[in-house]
Amino acid sequence: MKLTGKRGSIERSQQRWGYFFIAPCIFGLLVFSFGPMLFSLIISFTQWNMVTPAEFIGLENFKTLIHDPLVGISVRVTLYYTVLAVPLITAITFLLALVLNTKVKGLHVFRTIFYIPSIVPIVASCALWVYIFNPMFGLMNSMFRALGLPPQNFLFSPRGAVPGLALMAVWLSGNTVVIYLAGLQGISRELYEAANLDGAGIFQNFFHITLPMMTPIIFFNMLMAIINAMQTFSQAFIMTGGGPNNASLFLSLYIYQEAFKFQKMGYAAAVSWVLFLMVAIVAGIVFKTSRRWVFYESRAD
Image 1: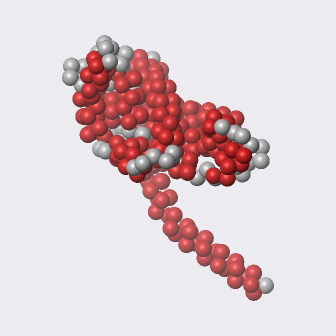
Image 2: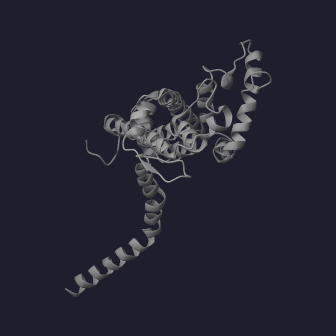
């Protein structure tokens, strides 16, 4: 009985210290995440320009956004960019990680090269890619001319703006390469040795060992890529301003314009909840379908 009481006292003490150490995180989550979300929900039912007192207008903001053509355009642009960027990021970063996982000389140098773009300030990255996409003397069109291909307008044409930004997103995904590489190096060598003894080749090893074992990491990186893509703001704000002809008017950029350019804070808050629901629905679909293709070693089924 004494041992049990002493053990219980130790466990309660550990729990108290655990709550003490996570208290700052919980406080930050409540104040800086849930608090602003609740506030935005409240002001979405008001008309407020941040100068005069807010006026309660009920569901008028939500009725207005249903008929707002720019909301429809920004939703389509956001989904189009997500559909383009996420598969590119997932495939290319995984391929790079596979290459870096081989016995390459100067592996640490290549890791650094691929990771650096993800820590470069976004303004500097945007300035660099504006130069790369310049239709007159940009690096991309210089390469096209060298290959005998016609030059493209990229960010300066409605058709090329979103694909150009999606291409830039791949360049910014060095941290994803590092995560994939860590996952690849965590796969047990014994699995490959056993498969090789049974006569498995490179493709059999990839499709029956590497790919299944990497599906949890692929799932995580793909989910994060979807969330980040649907909240893209800085690139469009700095590089295109939503143009040309609203071709890169992402939903987050439209929310910013309504809130801080036109001082429609209530309406912007209502549109922001559209973005939240979009992200939640897409993330929910990904989670729902993950059981069909994500393999966990500890899961019996």
